[in-house]
Amino acid sequence: MKQFTSQKKLENGPLRLLVAGLLAAPMLAGAVEFVDGGAPNPDKVLLGQLLFHDKELSGNRNISCATCHHALAETGDGLSLPVGEGGRGLGVTRNTGTGREAIRERVPRNAPPVFMLGSTEVTRMFHDGRLQANPDFPSGFESPAGMNLPDNLENILAAQAMFPVTSGAEMAGQGKENPIARAAAAGDLQRVWTILALRLQQNREYVRLFRAAFPDEIRQRRDITYAHAANAIAAFEIAAWRADRSPYDDFLAGVTGALNAAELMGHDLFFGKAGCSSCHSGEILSDMDFHAIAMPQVGPGKGNGPSGHEDWGRWLVTANDADKFRFRTPPLRNVALTAPYGHAGAYDTLEQVVRHHLDPVAALRGYNCAEQIVVPSRPDLDAIDCAVMSSPGLVDDIAAANELTPVILEDDEVSALIAFLHALTDKNNIDLRRDVPKSVPSGLTIVE
Image 1 (cartoon, rainbow, N blue to C red):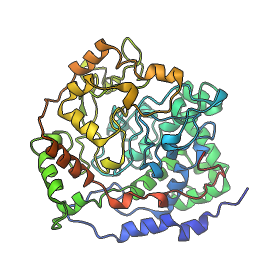
Image 2: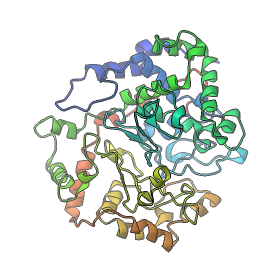
Image 3: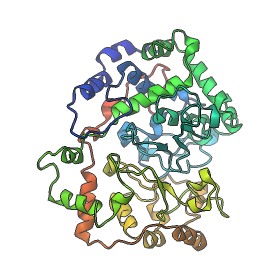
Image 4: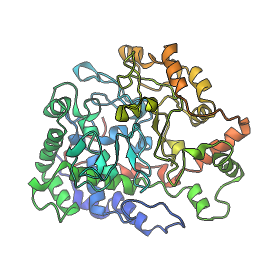
């Protein structure tokens, strides 16, 4: 096995240059506040970059965080619904795998982009908000782990990184095919995190990197926990994908001519007549709240309703019927880069999802699931994908929960609104090849 030369990467690698560039960049007036204080720890960021791309964190060592949140797919995967553990390939070319390793189901929700999630305004994670800041819990976060979430997680993005590795469909493995999969299937999250920590402790290079990143906490290999790994992954995501150098940021800073005429028109519509800012507010353009907007339901769902293929969103956290079909308002930074859109990735273009917001119920009823869903085809999975949208009664339920009032816009106004959404793009994030390492300490391949 070729030795991993991390010291050279640390001293001269592209990520070191990236972090140095972030520290040297002038701060704009009213700039976004990040949980790292705008001063990322380069050793922690490097470790996080490697962990993010290393399949060592999956049960069968065949998938990494980056598989569904890849720099070459703008921190997503380009699919309506991810192809998780067992699939092969990357982005829109990923398939469902073959033989016994093939996936058993699609991941039921769209892989959300990772841009600007280090903002201090991000207080809830996942489409249903099942992870949220709450000082009543020892960790500072309310989550599916309850009181058992480690108490040394540095921020909510680190807390989020604790959970994909515990999902059978995402990273842990299917059924009981490996120790991590067995622990995940039994709901033993602590066991999953312990096994992963033991793996990392056995890798000499990772031990050195962890000690450099956490000198006050890690002096020997047995001090490494999966929470440290999650903190490092979060540090990388925050430093690499800030997304705070867009034309819109320049506009907020008072830069003359930052937005062109169409973008200015779209800005005025967004914050005025179109009503977008009633939910998409703040520096990240999300109120971090939950809304039912009649978004089409595609894919396997979350086991809700008579079909078993519905996804009742926030209801899964609160069990309050008023929360059925409510999902967290997505942040909009770099939104033009991050299709498909919606909690299940129902819409593949920005124009489609914008027009849905203008008249949600009409768009829902006119949605063509078979033509619009973007997933690799497999007959047994295809048969499930459109189950809800093929049932008039279930569509009626989604429509009845809608909270948005129709808004009438002319075509040129829709075009202007889309132009403004493009102005939320940080041009430094269009080409993210620099964020992908050439190798990882486990020696496993980075791509399929």
